[in-house]
Image (tube, rainbow, N blue to C red; front, top):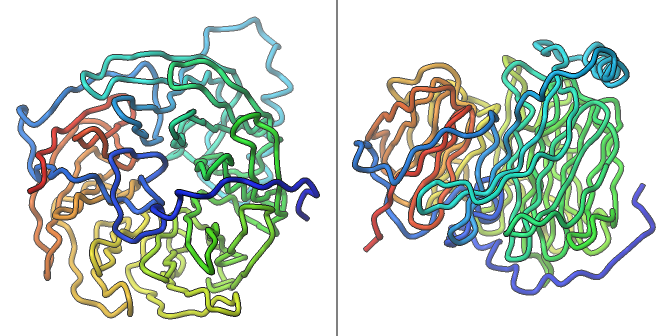
Length: 450
């Protein structure tokens, strides 16, 4: 059920988020404006030399979360192991994390390990650290490919918001751009054997979070961006933790949120009060699945994917009609990504799957244009593709950033090794593309588009 606390929020000026193909200098959330993955008006070289790097730095901690950019500031989350403590101090937390992992239907869980979380801010100009904060300690347990710092922050002109979670506590904290702590919220425990990795987004004066968890313990929620107070929640009947970040559509003169989830399918929410406008279950319920990738908008379509490891995966496009009902428009069930989110460039959707097979389709119809395997993929692709409008970039977990052309056929353009595990999505901003590996961050200089 939703909380009875309702608010009115200013949504004016947000329509730019919903325009398919819109670009902006700032990169305010996971995959940039409205999660589109489309960069600003610069061209990034497809094959990099040393001269193409603006800078390369070692980070003060590890993580798989992506950066966000506002102006000349870049924000991301790191995790570090805390200093040793006296024995017995964290027994309660350790037992809670172990119990959560044991009760999960998911395998590949790591044992609980103590962590300290570190939000940081860097200069986009030279990579120098402008500020860093060490906030809290806890014991993180999750999938072996997850990390304590796998979330991407959200930023606007007033603040930057970070999230991270343990079995005992889901933390959301906001800072000013200068590093002043504005508020911190405890949003309750996290139930999910793969561990927490849901990134927030900002919409007006709300922080929106997909807090789907296992065993029907999750919810969708909105937090007041000025105070950290929960404004509304929507109960979810989920059996698996999800990592999908919502997108925004414009419909009937108002902006609406769209979430994806295995059991619920597509859920459309009015951000003013958390009311459910429409919902349609479109994914296979016969097999266990998880919405890891995030939905994208193309004109009046919302396109989302769902799947689970070797089980079937589906990419489905829906449309919200005048009667506030979701209609299925097209569906793809072969070579659909499990982890990477798809990207729409122009009028084409590129489905870059975990093994590096890319399927290019008409975004309006789902009709296949071409399909091919990107050469030189090493390991799984766990980040999502992004594009400068001419080239699509995506990293494999061995730390190679692959580049293919936006074209009528598969045209590999480059393979750029970074020498370290990479499970993140690149970000654009301030004339560059930023790529994080597990312990490093690089800036690739862009060239002004003609």
